[in-house]
Image 1 (tube, rainbow, N blue to C red):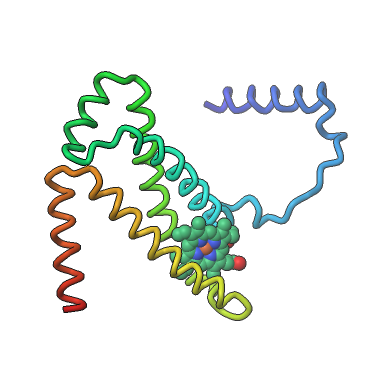
Image 2 (cartoon, rainbow, N blue to C red; image 1 turned 135 degrees about the vertical axis):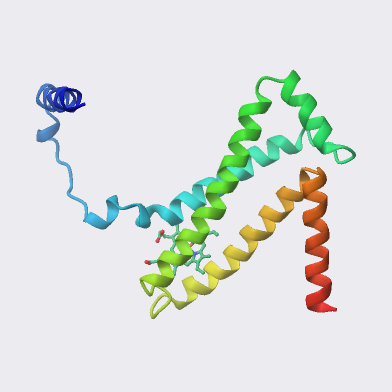
Length: 162
Ligand code: HEM
């Protein structure tokens, strides 16, 4: 392991020397630019964009009569369907977990305070919309768990609003 990291460092030094990378006019960036928490919002936005693109492509094959069975058939017959569906599901999880982490981070660092109050309010609305799209996508699968989730959603709405 140590040997490997030594070799990687030597390769890195070799590339920097041969390509003259240390002579390029690189601009130094603040430390905050290289932390994960700074990129959380961008990660959520990127996964949202991919969800939109892959979701539209999946919609081309969506069968509202029997979605779960059609998906199973497509997974076996179309080679591109698996990466499309899998990446859609992974992006959905990244978006929801990322949004929760992003909100927690902003709460803990006090980013809801002046002058960012409006950003916080927009964030709350974006968070609600993200949850709704997640619920929509979840129920679009149309399997037994999705039907149960819809029933819970209906129960929740009718008990909250009468
Ligand atoms: C759900 C979709 C969301 C997307 C796509 C999104 C996107 C972003 C992006 C790209 C930034 C700038 C970079 C960063 O600080 O990470 C940001 C900042 C911010 N977001 Fe979000 N956000 C979302 C949800 C939320 C939620 C749920 C909240 C809080 C309730 C929130 C509150 C904020 C605040 C206060 C900032 C400013 C942070 C700072 O300047 O330190 N956002 N958002």
